[in-house]
Amino acid sequence: MKTILYQICLYCLFFFNTVISFAQNGWFLQLPPAIGPTLFSVHFTDSQTGWAVGNASFILKTTNGGNTWSLQNTGITNGWFFGVDFINDQTGWVVGDSGLILKTTNGGSNWIVQNCDSNLKFNSVTFINSQTGWVVGDGGVILKTTNGGTTWITQTSGTSYQLESVFFYDTQIGWAVGEHGKILNTTNGGNNNWNNQTSGNTNDLLSVYFTDSQTGWAVGYIGVILHTADGGVTWIAQSINTIFWLQSVFFSNSQTGWTVGALGYVYHTTDGGNTWNLQASSTSNSLFSVYFSNDQTGWAVGAGNTILKTTNGGGSWIEETDYNKTQVNYPNPFNSTTKIKYTVSEKELVLIKIFDISGREITTLTNEEKPPGEYEINFVATGLQAGIYYYLIKTGNKTSAGKMVLVK
Image 1: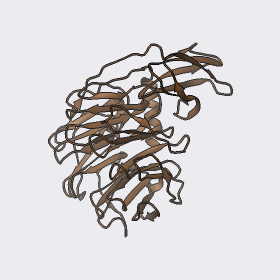
Image 2: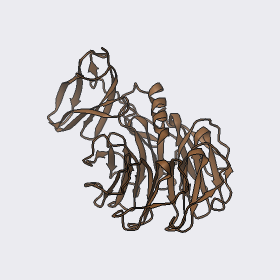
Image 3: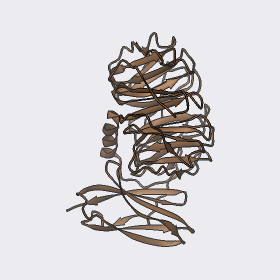
Image 4: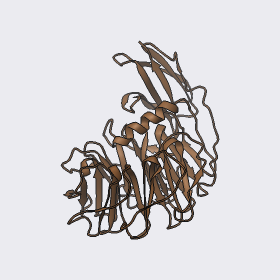
């Protein structure tokens, strides 16, 4: 996904100094907007159970609406996961770089790699039922399965452009969008071919969503929002007051929808997109995915391990900050070794990981149960290049992180 590096760089350039945790009503941050893995996709099966995926092989799960999130183990190191979709609280798929497709049938307790005979980057996945699904990605690739992913068949897309998002209304009718304003449509499950639709736009499209077989939206670069009321025969640009990219779009019905993107922008409509209003999100972190379980309750995820939630349709974002002064590293900047301090409030599992500026996991410093107390641990940067690194500390259900500068 060529857009990802640009977006991460934009984020890192402006916003990387905060170590905060949030929890209140309205829109609120459910994980600290601290540097760490970037989350690219979020999906919920109901108001309580959901998953968020990102780089550094991160798959997070919640069973209480996001009050707490747990990290799931895939057995894959340094993976980049770009898309997630579940058909119920047990069965779901995750897709990522290098032709990666993962499936779970037990809510993510175990993930199994599915073979697709491809090493292309997959950007989006959607399933209509337990058997039928599609994956799209770089090079115009479209894969389909009719047996739950046991086998994946390549479909003819007719394009070499990157495809960023795929959406199916039923087993027959679907759309895919991507580079240079590309919109593809099928009315036969993609079995014979995919047809080009005229978008009237040359900017990259990053997300597509339909509420029925006729009514849909696509969003992308330079604040582009396109709308169709006839299944994509015609696409009309809608007006929105932004020049920044829009990464994801979601509608809870034909009138009520949201789109998120650069710099934490969230826009909301209650009239099918005729007017879009900016909602205050309380974050400047770029957002990559948005999902709603109803017209009031929704989540958005993005850069720096950010997870936002609203319980009032995004009408307000309320945040409660809690700066943890004990979770710091010193010296900073450092030459070869720095100490990371942290506090354990009760006997619990402590996980500390180190990442580089691209989000690649460098090492795990500790992953063991600790009794209450204050601790410090050395990070020795032998063999690493000078630059910016990040630590992520997970104690029980709390997560925090921070920036370290290695100089030589």
